[in-house]
Amino acid sequence: MTIKKCTTELRQFREELYQNFNNRADTLMELVDAICSNPNARSVVEYSLTPCFRRSYSTIFKAIAEMTWDENTIARLLATYMPQPQARQFRLLGVDVTSQPRPFARTLADRGIVYQPNTVKGNKPITIGHQYSTVAVLPEAEAGVSSSWVIPLLTRRVSTDEDKELVGAEQVDLLLKDSQLPFARDLCVEVGDTSYSKPAYLHANRHHGHLVTITRVRGTRTFYQQHIPISSESGAGHPKWYGDVFSLKEESTWPEPGESLTITERNRRGKVHRVEIQAWRDMLMRGKYKPQRLPMHRHPFTLVRIVRYDEQGQLVYKRPLWLLVIGQRRHELSLLHIYHAYCQRFDLEHFFRFGKQKLLLTRFQTPEDVREESWWQLSHIAYAQLWLARHLAHSLPRPWERNLPSMKTFKISPPLVQRDFGRIIRQIGTPAKPPKPRGISPGRRKGMKLPSRPWRKVVVKGQQKANSP
Image 1 (cartoon, rainbow, N blue to C red):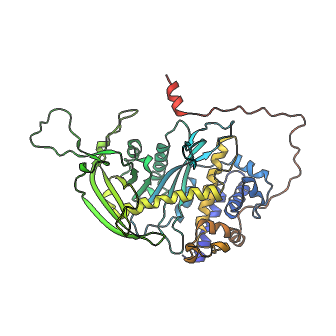
Image 2: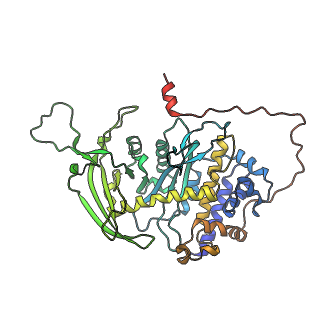
Image 3: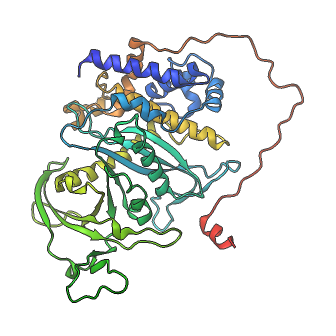
């Protein structure tokens, strides 16, 4: 892609983004640029010190308070710039949930118990706060560009009375049924971690015939082979759906795999690994009857087992990786496609880490949950703008980073684009208009007192079920 074309696309995207800001568009546009060009900010208010932000710090919070944004606007803005699949014949989507810790926000509504890693052994990995579900495109690798890039499309807060996996299913459904997006007509593959392998999630979007779901499953699950009718069986009674048991932890229950593949890979440290992939076609899982009926016997899937060995033939990981591939067009995916698609899921983890460390994704402190959601939208927009500028950025490594492999091979990553984004917007300009001072505001009347915000209770789902009639 030429520099001229990349510059034209970035300018066009910025103009479209500016037009989609309904209130305080100039402030929001400069705020997005400040997020993209200031990797050293420690709090949101410090973005007002960025050279591209020409307004006072108080306008940041006023603009976020008045921001209105449709959930699928980011996806529609980025639809024109998404690369077409080249090495694979499908579009790859990733869905995952991450936490927004807010343990001290006593006046913030709808806080619950959420996951947070804890390095102290014996402590529960939990905190108090919100959860956000994100759906992103996992693009193919590009020459000279780091493979950790994603294209964020949707983000939404998961309320305490919602199922986080089903919220992700609703987001994927929103993308697949939008006729303005390419996902409505192309073959799409979504990848998720273990929590997305439950029947409720797998059944949710099976009405989309062009969607294939790949999720990891725990090694303690039990599945079933399809029942093969025998001529001596009578036709009376309930039809038999499930055949022999397939227990993942008991190898004696496994039949011969229908397909096998062995490949050799070299990891980032230069070590050569042998990867063995086995697949069993047309497996079944038990459905559910409560709270709603989920006839999972109607949706057979492919079960994939992946084992990695080192040069000495020893297991690299203690347990094998089990994957579940479900969808009407799952047979169009080869074992290599399935393996590489799930491996790319971990790019979402890199996106969350970069967002929390460099885009201050979880640093916006507010007692209003709506404003917190608006900040998450702005952070995702800022990352999308960094992705569009990836071919325009220059590599600016720190002195201690010059010998890193990514610097030697000149792989442009999100931190490198963020370091150079200030130069990029100085060259291409901004659609935001300069501020017009209108005098000093009189402020609140003397003696005026605002009422105190009420404290909110932390929602614990186990207590909700126990107290329900």
